[in-house]
Length: 215
Image (cartoon, rainbow, N blue to C red; front, side, top):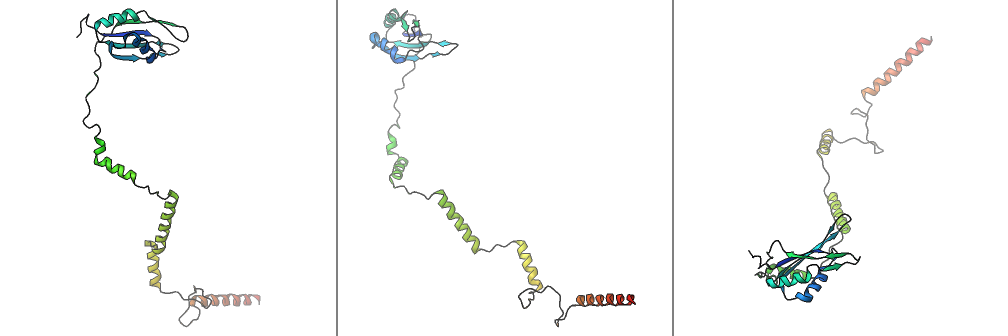
């Protein structure tokens, strides 16, 4: 831990919210370009209810540079575009630690150009692209294949099989001379069935009864 006289990290507070990092660095580098190792800027925000000031952190190379910087910037007044004034405050940062800069090189850096999978990928990219048919053409082709398969293979269900077996058990239907299937029952010699003869005899009896009643 650094002592009170060895501290090299300072913070600049009360900077204008609209101040950019480039504008602040331009003023710092004008007098302390080669005297600091690390710089961090935190921009402010302006809202209707609250103003958040910008701030900056600087880590100098020597403690003497901190004193010179504080004499130059502490109490420095910044004026924004609206004419508002902001008086800068320079003080030691609460934490004197500085983020380490990662300088270790990754051993896999640049090895992708020798990777076998990457080379296969480049080879695939170099090949000519084969354009696939559109979705509409593919759907039409599938429908044509399905309709062709449906015509070749007859549709059969358990109910249809049952009806075919029943028809086969009854035997073939007889047809008339005009090609229509005869639905009336006939005897073996072609005469009308008994049901037809009974209906005829019933009509004769009714007519005979009517004749007797007239006399």
